[in-house]
Image 1 (cartoon, rainbow, N blue to C red):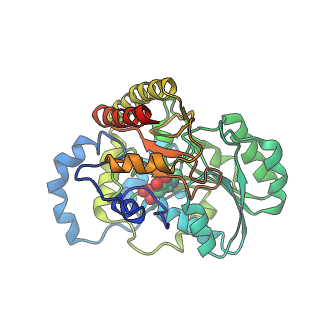
Image 2 (image 1 turned 90 degrees about the vertical axis):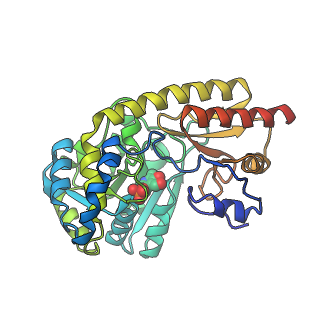
Length: 358
Ligand SMILES: Cc1ncc(COP(=O)(O)O)c(C=O)c1O
């Protein structure tokens, strides 16, 4: 059974589990804003057609300027990329042949990208349950590596690590000459605006990854950026293919980053929905991760094997993200995006049907 290594494109999951895909499905496997892209992007979309006639700005000048203002960082600390995924690949190239520690469970692309750049990869696996960052077992490992990847708020658990712990990690990494790569792809879903981006001024070994595809619901366009000290940015820039970020993505980024109202509306929706879902799960003997963002992990506390639940959900048109390829989770949990009220209600209905028989 070779399951797909990412969420989205659900037909691959149906194929690999040999389940007939129902006519109507709801895809909870990709963590995309349920409100969709900012309204202005849709309204102005026809105006963008003419952009396909020209090469995109390889420096992404306008977007970099906007990011510089919103992050309060100089432009030479910013690199725009074809989604967070491209930037992860570029960072891995920058780390070529070095020893990399990944704090797991985490987005699988760090390992893939590092392996294909000839890095030696080791893991530090967080304790299942609260998945908090504990420094005592972690700090000694820093002596043996050149870089650490950490994702906070964490994909797949949704847990945002304690600020003090992450800061201690950043400091310890700097002391040992280790690069810290913090993936903040989901930071803009946090209720309290918070980021480690400002620390790049004080910690020359710190790199911050961002994605615009989640909050602004533009995964099909591909857009993200990297924040780091100018030295690192200029080195990583050399690996980037020319024009890797297309004009439509650049335009979408400029419109999206200005729309603060859309972000607030999204956060409100997610908070309300997550609260309701948590109530349901807790009252019905399911265990849920302590997520602070737009996705969470669930398991049926009455079952040791979650595969029958995964199959049941898929047969009933509910598509979760399996967790077989997350070290530390190994299929024992299912991950769901928080979607619209209607979709979440359908999810709860199917979970109730499961509970009625199990
Ligand atoms: C934690 C994390 N980082 C980065 C990415 C890459 O995002 P994108 O390439 O769509 O910007 C993803 C996508 O799922 C992710 O979950």
